[in-house]
Image 1 (tube, rainbow, N blue to C red):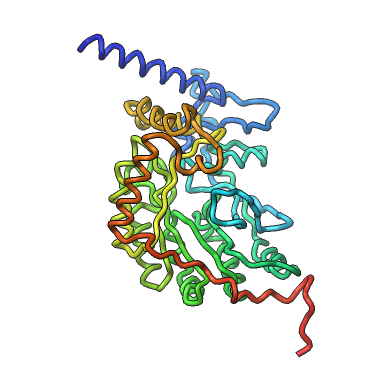
Image 2 (image 1 turned 180 degrees about the vertical axis):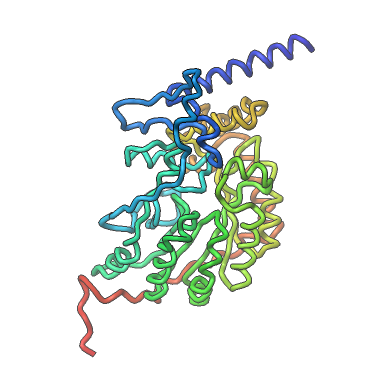
Length: 383
């Protein structure tokens, strides 16, 4: 067995060296004391920056002179709030993002690269340097009032979480819901936060009119794993409790097993679906882990820090579903992956969903109740 052990050790060393090389290219790891409570271990320069930053310990423990990463929120003043898309592999054509960046800090978040557009890092900056859009509700009302606007479900939470911790203070999401309810506009929400139950009053009224659905994303039922992978998101137990609370209030709820991390969380898929169904979920979906652009080295660094013994296996499975690459952005493939392992996950999901009675009937949200706001572009009524 000795030659095999040596071969495995050598292979692991090569993979670890390769991963560390990727990390070194984008900036050395930030000391643990500075990033306590965060998932990313690095803070690489954005891909549009003309220079790159490299942090290193000079032996004098200079990191102690640097402040820890604390959450900072800046106000963003966009001209519009509804984002349009024409992607053929997603079910909505418009969405709203009340915030840019996300304090939940999920290490695998596919939205991390968007922080590069702000001249910031997709690493620790994405989790700690956030942008709030306090005029979102006013902008929404203005856009709904435009002549010729055709209502279709607005998706919220598809990029960054609308119920991340700063929503407790800013309450932008609640203001958006108030506008949507007032004008009979349908909304679909995806979140990892139990804070969504704060708005059960509005959501239950909208749901009674066929205007609202909520999906809770559950990655794992292992609280310890969730804490390292999604450090500031609600615990798995609280997400399931939120599902139950919403369901009992008459709000259609679903569960997203997302993302499925092969070799790490894929074995939990059936248990997650079972637990969500018991909590009242009637629909379910799943997404395979996505590692676009800067997300790849950030995830690899996290994997090496927390699961060094699984690094080779997890990355091998990921690449087996992505045509040998860390990620394949091709429409139709990016969400589910390809190959035997991806096929197996898909069949397991279908069999379990069928056994639990999930996805038997998908109720579309109504658009016929929409009443445009009075405002720019609309003729005011005389009587």
